[in-house]
Length: 98
Image (tube, rainbow, N blue to C red; front, side, top):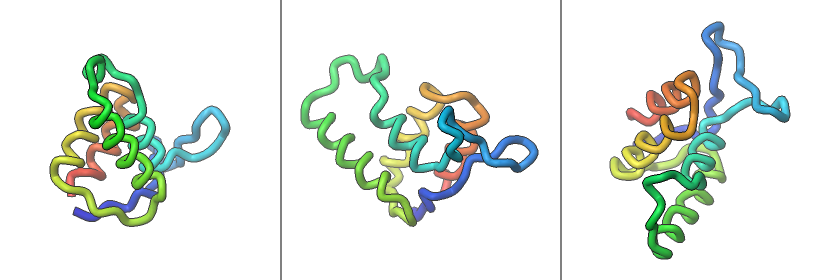
């Protein structure tokens, strides 16, 4: 499925949600940071898996329209709620539904 990584996260009034540097949150930022976060499920991640995730994060960081496999979308949807509040993770998960 194709997903636009440059989509903005918005609050309940439709206004952009901004980070601590007053920059608007884009989907790519959420996805990249969720892939780079050290979660409990990553405790015993192999070097190969870490390299694969790092390359995936680099690709998403480029932004624009990205083709995601169902497995990639599923991995992201699993990680997002573990990293972010519902207002961010919920929107991002919806954007990844395809």
